[in-house]
Amino acid sequence: MNSSTKPYVNFDAMKNTIDAVRQQPQLGKVSFSMQSQSMGGLALSSQTGPLTQDTEVDDSRRGKFTLVSDEPVGLLGTDLGVSPAEYILKGLAGCYAVTLVSIAASKDIQLDEIKLDLYFDIDLNGFLGIDPSVRNGAQGIRVDVQLTSEGTSRENLDELVQLLPQRSPIHDTLANPVNIATRLI
Image (cartoon, helix red, strand yellow):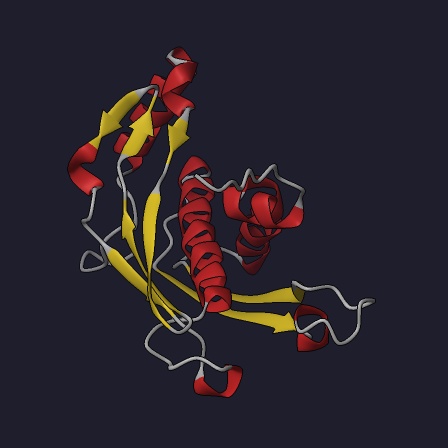
């Protein structure tokens, strides 16, 4: 790593966080939240809500970020924002980046660059109810990873990528059943 390259994460801060959660496991209990409202058509505006960690509510994130979702015109939307499928890819990409950096840090590997190309493959015959044998959701999600780390072997970088399915919370959420409680209030 050259002196002009900024590290992706402060190794000491990461180790301190790991130690804090190890000593107080309840600090690992975190809830993210979003509040969403229709903008007409298929568009939806969502704002970040409070973050809760170990029952402590942090309101500083409430309304801090706004995300707009819609569908492309070809899929009956007005293309005012990123599609829900693209948000899933963004969520996975963001989590993969955090996971790669944390795994690399634990192995004393400095990542100089992370590039991810993600693809969400869906067959609309399921969603549109045309063919009940076709799954409504993604048929598959593909991720191509490029890592740059001066002085790190391809084998060591490949090991980081191979650990992603085991360590990424978003990968785990997408790949395994999770309880989703939906209700009318």
